[in-house]
Image 1 (cartoon, rainbow, N blue to C red):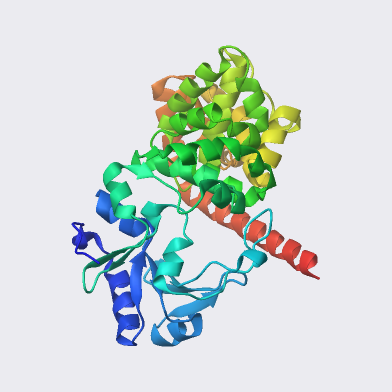
Image 2: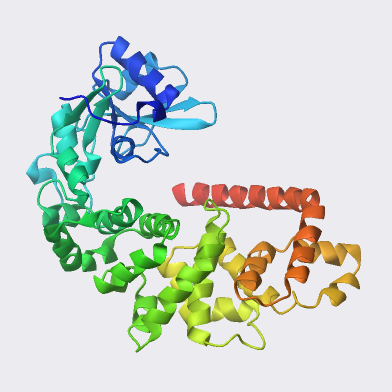
Length: 411
């Protein structure tokens, strides 16, 4: 243990309070993972995760406003204001005979010691514990050394750890570009060698990692490296095949860099996926088309439907929003025609799910004069109250539909 040099003022007071409450109950409790790493690097942590010797039921009794979630991996969520904090009991790796030959570990509720818990984490820089009360750093995997070397290194044998969970390939790639660290050579070699195992990862997990990559400051660099490592072949194979054509890869990465500059809400998955798909669309079409495809034509195109549905894991309403945004590019330059519509038809256009995304496409490609673009934004803002109520109702219907679908599937 040692007292590290980190930004103690950046430690969330609620997270500190949870640690104190558990330590008061006699349980060993630390901040863990990415928040410790970021504090050491000099990045303000987005989330604060907590690891403790207290079993989930004891955490729930010791910490107010907490509840247990999960079946395969039981942990406790603690609510404070608008934030949630994850509290996990120290785990240990299951016996070798219980580890499946392929795929993630299914039984992950074997409680262990802090050292056992640190050893089962993915990268050394994510295996650091910090006691914010005693101001002690606990480092079982030489994570501090790798932070000083600015190196991402796997805990344990990288081939085995990637075989356990291939999603770690995407996680290592994303983390390297997020914090500007290099990937340790053996891990990099294992990522390339094990890339094909990503075919067996479930689509929702790949979707989440891809979204996180697309939220990076420079996602085009991460995608370029994924292409170089042959990782893209097994994550978005349709795109990989296109990029294999001469000159296409360079054009796509340049387009991706350009269009993703127009992100203004990193929490909006439709916007993130939409700009990514538009970069693909513009790369394949070269010049700006005289007429953009209808939403039905775009959705029925085998290439785009394969990418959206089977490779990105986009929901149907997300696919429809992107398709409608591309179709709306045909009408944004005809403001006079819009002014001749009845108020109800004007509102129908403004409330279209793809309208705001279409404005981003148009701005990125300079498809309409800035004055017209500004007029469209003003029209949208003037009607925002009506549009918001409609959007809220649509979101409720989607939630209700998903709930019914889940109930049917669970019978």
